[in-house]
Image (tube, rainbow, N blue to C red; front, side, top):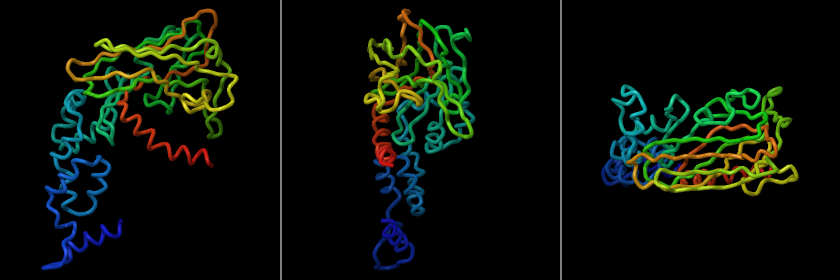
Length: 310
């Protein structure tokens, strides 16, 4: 494939008269029409072929279709001088990097492949029962979080984490999930080590996850965060429950219009005070389009299979 494209490009540049045409002879407008059906990474790869492809890959008309319909709402979170003179391609590149808001406790960005809007909310942006009492909770700095800090629960009886976000999300089907980690972790001699001396109580009663939206949609799920009797992989989440980050799916909600802004309330709680619980890191909540999550899983599946075979 690479050799044939190279020869076509060269033939367009070197052949004259009645010789066969090459890629260099394709009108830029035709190339741009094809690019409308490709993903941004595919467009950037093809831009290397020749001048016509490079020009089409910079077309505002092409990149306008890759941006979310309400991308101006995302730009409103950015200082105007950062995007005032940018092309649509430059705006896409800008928005594909996380944009912080609400004092840096929330981030929104455009997925590089699909152009859909994603969001993450830090534990710092949530209401956590007992968070100000160091007997119960402490903040741990870490590079394993996109926000560089996680909340670590040492021990508590009433466990409750609540959050709310209001944002003009574009029309799509979104999934909401909590990212948590059983046990504390650190590095020792360059290797990651998990500590579970405080981990207890999560196998007695399930944790309840809930979400509600401003237009009345609801989602709920329950899950035991720990299973001390299980030695195999957790079949629901595809991962061992101790020593790694797990995304617990809360539910889905549908946005049909970016106006008015969608308000989402979410929570995770275990408020049965018959027993204490502890040894849990709470990182963030993610709001991701269903299509983006499914696409990521399909892309990662071959790598995970290779790791298991090794």
